[in-house]
Length: 470
Image (cartoon, rainbow, N blue to C red; front, top):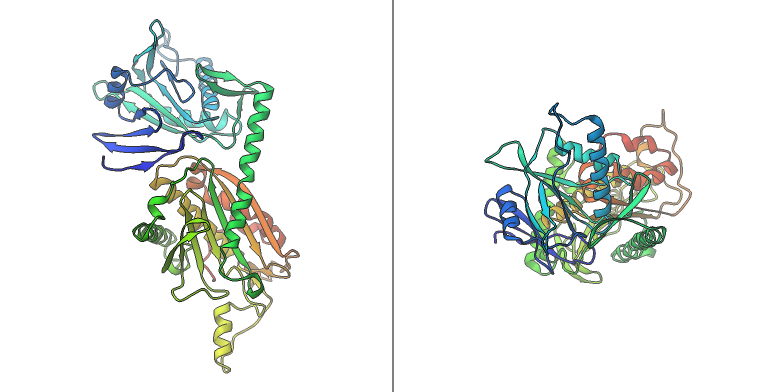
């Protein structure tokens, strides 16, 4: 076994593994031998050996996506639309707990258990995009799925299609004005009571983020009464995590070094992608010098200081054994002089030092960039353990009362400063791993939009990334 990482597909299956060996990758969910190879030969061999049980709540097989064409050799638009509706129902039903749909497999129900065999189906160009659009456009809320065509080398243009549907924090999902779920016998239409129960579970899932956000704030090394600048926090909680989800990055000194390395590599990539407009030591997870094991929460903390924290200077990144990822920014705004805390320190040490003063600021532009950085870290850690599930996300600011926006400084000719009239800001949302990976700016915009509106700078959320100030 070349690699042993973890994958959570279904809430009550707490851990599984990704094994790389031979010519392909195999996703394996523990507790039962739930092996789903991702190459044609290995998948055909698995069918031949009869390794797939008759368990339709986590895997289902279809002969083909579209019906066999008539004399014209092509499917009509009506046939395609009907096929898309049918596969959308299957995707929506599988999302309640997560699992796989496999196209290109025939089922002989005359035996007990049934026998599955290859049924080569065409793999026309664009079929992967078509299935992706079905998941996004025909299902409410939209689904993000992973589609893997498995082409037969001996018969190019035909083979299997593997569709991986992570368990969705937005379940149940609707298509054609009906909600679908799964039982051991396959797809089912959910009753009103079942829909209500799933929505209640979804609401309870969303409530998990609040105590975790409190835990992040409580880990701040600067006591509230000692603070002179705003502090910013981000908390990310996996919807389907497990006990030792990130233990290989948190459990001991060697694991901490691996976490620092992963953070550094992610920060370097962000710097390079920004065209060197951002500094390594300004990236949220960059320049982490100190690390320690934490008992509450159980996990690892990295920080930018060596000798100890100072008010208005530095950042912390936390990763828990069981999945939550945390960020604490001790410099999310200026001192009441309108200057960065480091400038105030220099002025205090040198009476001859002169630096301009101004209104106290919120570094909302810098914090936006660092939220994007942390979303990148969420993606990196998810990829490192092959976790495709969703995330609950929350941001929190304190010390905001009476402060103006960082973005208004030097731009007053078209943007009048607005003083924030509350001391705290809190907002939570949910996102899939794919949404975070593909559209981090949209996710951070959702988290910060109301703060920017309160500061009068909402239009800048769609603007380019700015070099950090703090």
